Image 1 (cartoon, helix red, strand yellow):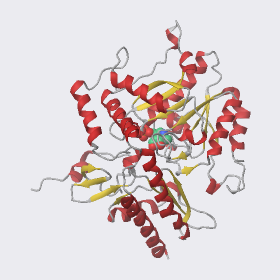
Image 2 (cartoon, rainbow, N blue to C red):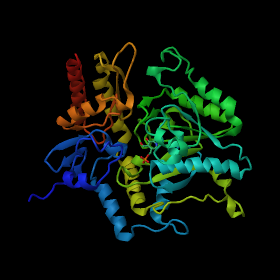
Image 3 (cartoon, rainbow, N blue to C red):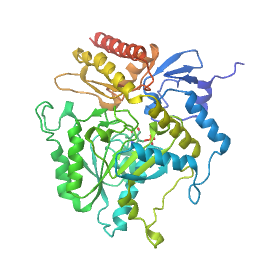
Image 4 (tube, rainbow, N blue to C red):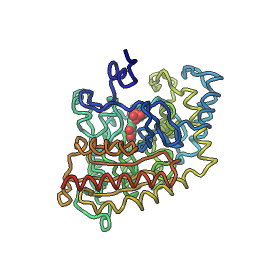
Length: 448
Ligand SMILES: Cc1ncc(COP(=O)(O)O)c(C=O)c1O
């Protein structure tokens, strides 16, 4: 009898995320990864075009990161973070505070992007409670937002097929329009508009500011909700509105942090600082799960009291995991020692040059590029801009075509995006861009 392979064994016992297990194609059996490439058990080499779900930045199996991980493992792997501290956590906090926007001074660690968001929501809520302003307990978020899959993070995300079965568990939020220029909520053109779409956020704040704890956004690039790239003026305007209505502003930089939009943090595009910032994903360069919620001294001070009731009662078993912190520190070393942001600027130029022309194709509605992310929004009809959204069958169909060519992409329905590790070479980026162009051109011929 033959020994079952990895995929056969997987099929017997595993359940994969966001995967319809009845119909999904077999998972890719990865046995090795190096730089931008993944190697499969059946001998294929695939270019990791999604940075392994947006987490990898310096490439897989990076010798420097491997060393940091193994050196920390020789010291100790983990201790509880209530009542104990350690150098990796302290060093990392100091280093993070040196690179995040000014005014952020306190780091609270957790495990992943969703928990970084949960911590932000709870901090904002309890901040007002501790000040005796418990009427400020609701949140304003944006349509098409995605902040994670835990219950609080789902509540502040867009109401969608991701969240609908859980509706009874979710708390109500007020949603305002994002600046989705290709589908402008006001029917305006970016070239001539004055960021009029901010009126939706302003109206929400006018109406609810007395009860709002915080406004939460994914600055500059709304990810899973459609890879929507913002004009930086919207971000600056949102900050101004939060100041005017004296509400906290939370920047969810779980996706955008650590260079993904071309700046170290997306808030820098508008030279603004949030009151609370959520980080994860590329924080550990894609090595280990770690979240960080970073806030101001003003917010921290509201939790200081002789009364233990004002304590922030939140924590996770793996808070400030030393292995994860050690790799995160080594990743920040790489940012310091090599000009990572210059590399991203080159990648951005290649993405722009290679993808912009695709707008000529009948199925391409819009092409957007920001930092190391290139996005192609597909439509069924250019006039009506119609799409099947996240469940559009074109997503999995194209993913299979890209895979045949050795390119691993995971379109969000009708949104095809390419977000490789920053270490990708110009030649590799151009190759991937060519594959995207050819597959989309072929799709046009086949559709006709
Ligand atoms: C902006 C944003 N926030 C939060 C999350 C949730 O992160 P995680 O999947 O690590 O829980 C994501 C994940 O894609 C994200 O893009």
